[in-house]
Image 1 (cartoon, rainbow, N blue to C red):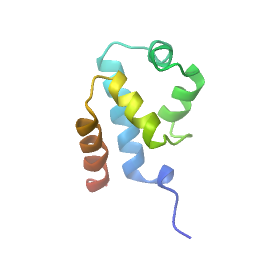
Image 2: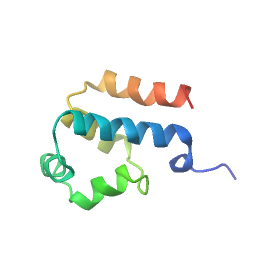
Image 3: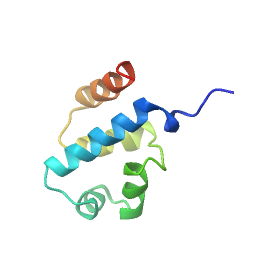
Length: 83
């Protein structure tokens, strides 16, 4: 059975980059979660690597961080290639 992507280096790198984008934007987890309409605990679990995002959540999160869908996909794809 293949390993789940949540346990890969590529996933850890992507999550770290998403967190860095949030921090660079000067947003707390609570601030960003409020914009997204999510509980803060969900964002915390994502950033801790304990929860995966589905594609819709990923695009919503990256949009809230100021990325276009194209930039978001590039971010995810570049994390995959560098793993």
